[in-house]
Image 1 (spheres, helix red, strand yellow):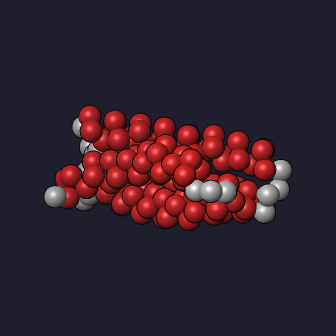
Image 2 (cartoon, rainbow, N blue to C red):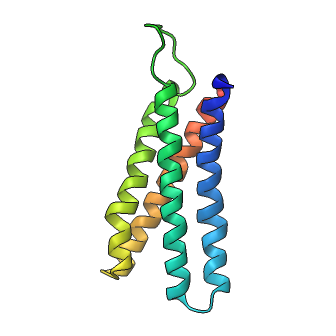
Image 3 (tube, rainbow, N blue to C red):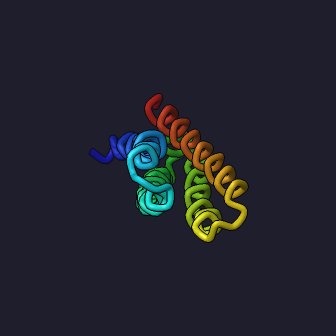
Amino acid sequence: MRADLPLLAAALWWGSLSAIGFMAVPLLFAHIPTAAMAGAMAAQLFQAQMWLSVGCTLALLVVSLPKDGSVGVNQAQAAIFFIVAGMLLALLIQFGVAPRIVARQNLRLWHGLGSAMYAAQWLCALLTLLRVARR
């Protein structure tokens, strides 16, 4: 089971980003009567997604630690840059961008930046998943 942990964590990370960002949130805006209500619900989903992302990336970082001074590269070590970048993006979106969106400060700028950062995190998760699956 421990050998499968990197693949499971990477798959959960990428899959949850895909489901929330590309399916659940667009459906909220399509079916909830007001954009404000949909936005409030989307913020809750994105917050939950951020914690899931942090958990998955922490798991990937822990399993990437070398064991007993071994020199070989394990599954998660091959994607360490993408893991760290994805975690940082998740935290920056939640604690840097999201508060400005909620406060409606220059909404177009911050929403666009948040969307681009979410897409970059999604790409980090995908590249991590592909590298972990290859090993």
